[in-house]
Structures are given as structure tokens and as C-alpha cells.
Amino acid sequence: MVNQSVINKVALLLLDYIVELPATIRQLASEDADAMFNKSPHGLSTRELVSEISGLQGKGLIYIEGDDGTSFRLHEGDDVSGEILDLKVCLSAAGGKLWESAFKPDWNRFLSVDMEITDSGGEAFRLGALNKALLEEIREQLRKLAEVHHIEGVTSWRATYWKQFERGYQLEFSVKKLEIDSLLVKSRKQWCLDWSGLG
Image 1 (cartoon, rainbow, N blue to C red):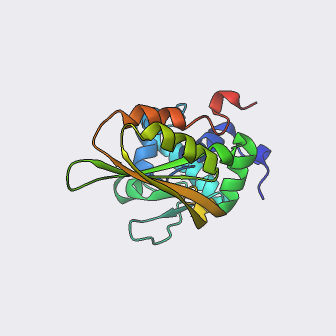
Image 2 (image 1 turned 120 degrees about the horizontal axis):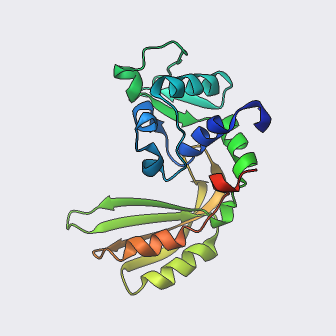
């Protein structure tokens, strides 16, 4: 396990960028990365970003892969254009543990949201949570807006691509109205420290 003091704050912020979903180097290097990820800006040039990512990979905190899932080893001096920008940066188990030690997530408050557009033009949602009561609260609020199904327990529930629990719960529903967005944003309560809360 890498101690939190071994990496700088910018590197820790980069781990936070990819905590819920992997991201391409192009996305992380974007001028709008802070808005895209809803995080504080990292302030790095593309070359500096690649250097930080290379350092995180060297410490085993992230891994990098191509579209086909092939592992890729990034080097500090690599050309920062073309195909390298399309590589995905993913949090490793060690990186996840380090992120958890810094950001102190309360997984009982975490809500995963997956959405698909249906053939009829509506939206089909699957919400996941470790805490069944959180989904029950949302289900009650949804009854006015959507066709809500029952909450079911699932084994081996993935909160994120790197974090898994023995058990969790999910709720599925379909909706044609857009009011659902504000309800879900409100329901995704703060579940970990944000950048301003770090010491």
C-alpha cells in the first residue's frame, strides 16, 4: 500500500477524477476537464499530465489500457499526441485504497446511476446502492414520475469499476419525463470528502 504522503496533491486529484469511471488521457488533458468531471482543475499541461500519470502507474495506483483492453505502459518521455491520448486511465485496487484513505467515502451513501435511452424515447434507469434504505427513499419519490419496479438484492455488487461489495441493492425504473434528473442529483448526496475538504 502506498502511503498518501508519497504522492502530491495533484496526483491525488487525478485519482479522484477517475474514481467512478475510467477516463482517456484526452479527457483528462481537456481544458474543460474540471467541468467534465465536476472536480477542481488540475492545472497541468498535457505533457505534465502524462508525467503525473506515468508516475501513478509506476507506483501501481493506476493502470492504462487501450480500447481493446490491452495493457499499456506509459513512459514520461512519450509523445503526447495521437493514439496515446485515447488510452484509458483506470484506478487500480491500490489506487482505490489510497483514494479511500484520503477522501473518506461513506459507501452507505453512494448511489450508482446507469441510464439507457429506450426504443420509445424514454429513459431506463438502474440505481445501485449498498444501503437499501437509500433506494427505498428514492423509490417513494419516484412513484409520481415513473413506473418503478421493486428493489432487489444483488450479490457481488459493483459500486464502481474498481470497488465491489459482497451484497448491494438495485432499483430499476423507466421514465419519459426529465424531472428525474434533479431528483437523482439531489439523491446523490455527498458521499465522500471533496477537494476542498482535504487537509
